[in-house]
Length: 99
Image (cartoon, rainbow, N blue to C red; front, side, top):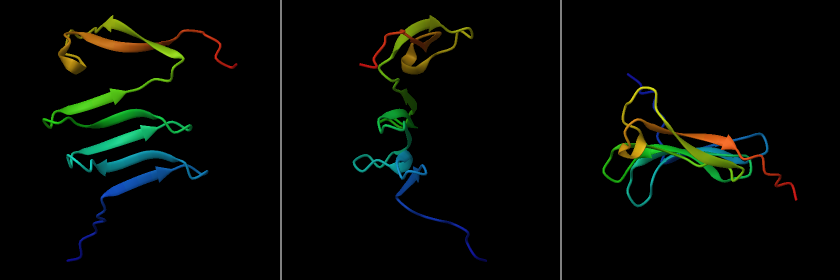
């Protein structure tokens, strides 16, 4: 029987221009797995992985043009960080940053 397995320490998904857009890897210091998504300019926007105590975690980082707005969750469940029934929505602050 032949194993159809590919093993590596790091996968990088690149776009047509060669820019890294996603990374699946284990952190060097903690060896915890994570999947990181980057925007076209390079900054990290989403990290899905395990925290230091191996609890699932999702970190979202919005571009500067968006500001976080806290809202009450419709389900009343526990949100990220243990806040009861809260979620974070992002809204455009309509500030012109083209200059």
